[in-house]
Image (cartoon, rainbow over all chains, first blue to last red; front, side):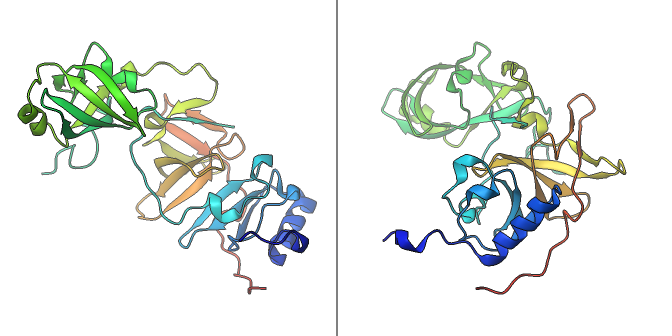
Amino acid sequence: MSRSVWKGPFVEGYVLKKAQTVQESGRNEVIKIWSRRSMIMPQFIGLTFGVYNGQKFIPVLVTDEMIGHKFGEFAPTRTYYGHGADKKAKRK
Amino acid sequence: MRTAAQNGKSADEDFICIAQIGRPHGVRGGVHLAVFADDADLLLSESGVTDENGRFLFKILRLSGQKNGRFIAEIENIATREAAEALRHVKLHIPRSILPDLDEEDSYYHVDLIGLDVAEEQSGDILGDIVAVQNFGAGDLLEIRKTGKKETFFVPFTRGYVPVVSLAERRVVLDLPQGFFSVPEKPEKT
């Protein structure tokens, strides 16, 4: 069952506080969080979060397409390496 | 002594693994093929496919029946099910030089980035090397192993964090913000 709309999105309090602090300071910093269940909010766009996956912090650079998703979706707890083959990476 | 293949690397780094043969298909020598590349047509090149050391194996004549990155392949001079069975689990490689040049600026093949040294911008010290390039849905990440250590860390593949990528010098330069490696105290749950 999906979450009731009247409750609004869930975001852990400390995540909001940390994000606000970094935004106000204007520093380029990775905001390390453990809350994988928190929803990505519009005010997080452009910030880089380090989302804990049980072992390490995975950097998540928030873009507008991620709004409404949970942080945990971008920090998998199991890693599959596979083959590089002809796969490409683009520096943004 | 371990061979280059046992170390998980090609003896000549110019050959990349692109597919693996699976079970036979039918009685005329067809095989199932798990293709790791985005462009499966690379397997149909005139030069054929090789093993990890660059030794010519065979030519693939046709690929069909694509489903979830798996194909059915017809191989030159393989005409019986028994011959196809003998090829099971064989990994197919192609020369790196076959891959087309990337036109887009700041685009790199994963195979070119893996193995590059990683230096810190301010001190110039070598931190480690790139072991993988991952994408978990929030952009490309470089996975870096610190020199002499087992654990790895991730850095976003952006101009801000990776201002210099030099394939000629085989190194990238990182500009990490202060406190990148520090871990704050874990807050209590609300």
